[in-house]
Length: 365
Image (cartoon, helix red, strand yellow):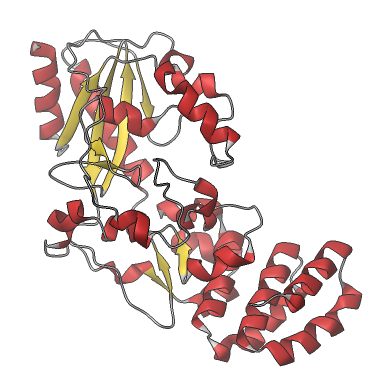
């Protein structure tokens, strides 16, 4: 117990307000849930495919005995920015990349603990195959909402999660049982743009807007309209959640205007310019081309007709992906003129791109 209180004090001195401890290392009680999720096709390509690796903490840190989990609040006072001409980043991508920020905090915490006792550890901030939210829930950082996000009673769900896998013997208060904190509320389910939140629990990742802004896989037509103007991430299920009123009622801690993205500028950027302007953000990891694809979806959804010529020029892009989304965008902006353009371009394209153009011209967009 003494060690735990010392660690708490060290964390508080570093500005870490949310901290908990767990020595649950075996998560095999979730095997069936994880298996059914994969079987139903709800998992994403970003996840570890070997379920057993996800359920055994010792697959990542063999000598693990306890886990020190922390939460870092973000987005204080944030309210969704309204725009008719710009793209939008999730508030999770505001400021310095939280992976780096939280990683440094955890490293500093480890160094503080080492002043009292030597120990081995591994830092995890969305970088391991393990079930981050389940680990942090068991450490008492919060309870699951229906949107599968962890909700802290003081800060809501606007918290970034990370933890130290350690070989320390710590007296832990494990909280394995799930607490229903949502009751009859289903606002997140009703407001999810692509109905990705499942009534029976869990998320169909492949329909989630946040996932769609990051995947390199093909995005079905019917999902693109609901992506609206999102360039990276999505905050809808958090913004409608009553548990986050404690966050939204606060005064904004920052000017969140930088989350609005000039899509015309983005379309014209080269890789170096993109890295220079956006490389420090958490959302930049997917690179310029994925952001550019999302900008094309944004232009089509916002009906930014003044960018028609700029988009048309992307039909000459060396990337087949960019060509195909540019074609979708053009048809959303001006169906008659763009059909003529696409027909004229057919002779320059490979079979995959030709087939996509034909499918697009025949579809109701």
